[in-house]
Length: 252
Ligand SMILES: [Zn+2]
Image (spheres, rainbow, N blue to C red):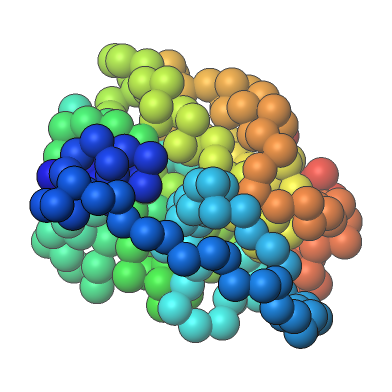
């Protein structure tokens, strides 16, 4: 009863027992005269209470722990070439290879160990350490005119779990890859022609013949989010400064 009184207000109060036992109605004293409320100017923006709380920023976890390494100049896309995997599993495998940790900077799940499209930044990215994902063969390095470690030193390694020689990446994975790529392009001012597949610079099929870089780039172009920060042109990129013959236009 008490609850109903509160919810429905005084109108309902009379009908739900808020009447004195004698049967007399409660005497309601007249309203006090209007009084003056001093106006205080408040600089704070008014937020309507009906507005939904702002969604948490999904990119929050994609920032490194410390300052951003300035010489990132490429985003290099890979596949794991396995039907399953996660950052933890790749980390274990790479440590078995003798590396200090997972060689990539980001791992995008395929629904096997982590949800499809789930993005895991690795400790290597958090600490802004060069990658261990695109070391060139001496022959390819010679042909490109760069050191074999060039793309590890300047490339942000993004791996999608899956073997894309056999299956196509899922829509969820592609959408996540596009969002992450757009974010990294903006954050590190990397132009589109420096978003490359591993195979674009080395003798490999990675990220698999069923992974289409054009599809990824089209999705990236269609995204307006996350920021409006302008992307610099290839020729203006700081990684061009004194870093061999890789230059204007990249490898598209
Ligand atoms: Zn690769």
